[in-house]
Image (cartoon, rainbow, N blue to C red; front, side, top):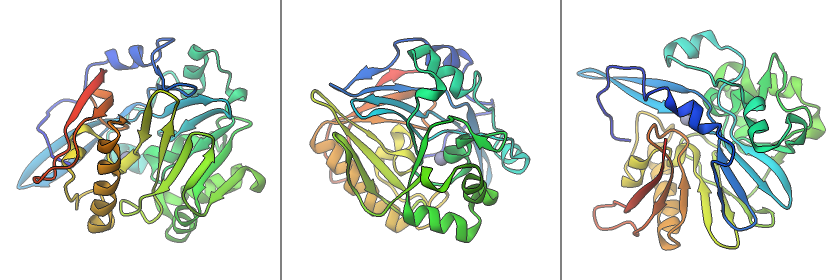
Length: 284
Ligand SMILES: [Zn+2]
């Protein structure tokens, strides 16, 4: 990800208001998708001098014939160490109130797909140590789950989720494939050992939730990211594969961390320079 200079805390506060406007979202043809406002954070890099990179968190609300789900869940219970380090502003209003703007109650949410177990993606599964959405099932790649438990990722987040959710409500996905009609999951490790992305194939459009594989528009330059990825070469291989698949179909990309746009269209295949053409559509 290319760094940028910024001395402030991120984009203007207009974003949360727009993000919860009823009807903001799009219909892929049988699958409705809408970005929720998951708050924001800041990466600080020391590259000779300090650079601040403002990032958003945008869980994606999805609704199809198979039910209602959230793709990633932003931050949850306060985590002083990480919240201070990353200058976290948690979502306001909280996600369970934001879904009401779409006529959805917290009890209506059937599943939480967690792309990986970093605090800014999976933390929001919990509220006060309990499931944020009372009926939701957790969907996560088996390797990510086992690795998160083994390495105590994000301060034992997987352990806390395991305590809060009944075992029958944690569904470990062993491989990629079509989980529900039009809802495809694909392992794309490298950022973490078990990161998974989602391809939503509606009857009109295709949209990808790429999480930290391709988190911002600039990620489509398809470069190595040694600052963010645990295994930068492995991550880059998957970034190129997924970027090329999206470009080949002119797919939409739902950008989790991009402070400017929540959705973009991937227009051109990765070219000689490894740059996929991308057009940002949904300005925040
Ligand atoms: Zn992230």
